[in-house]
Image (cartoon, rainbow, N blue to C red; front, side):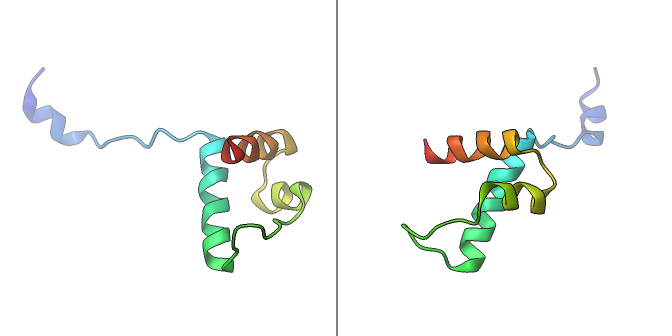
Length: 66
């Protein structure tokens, strides 16, 4: 394969839906000025706002907690 052909490729963003949720939550926390110990909105509201299922939200929150 010609090295010149590589210029037509751009790095892919290896994101899963869970990673996108984590990124969105981190932005929310930062923009809302939440501090350690502050409560997040209910899981069902977060999921609805982001347009994801509760299982996706729960998985993301569990990863974040870990």
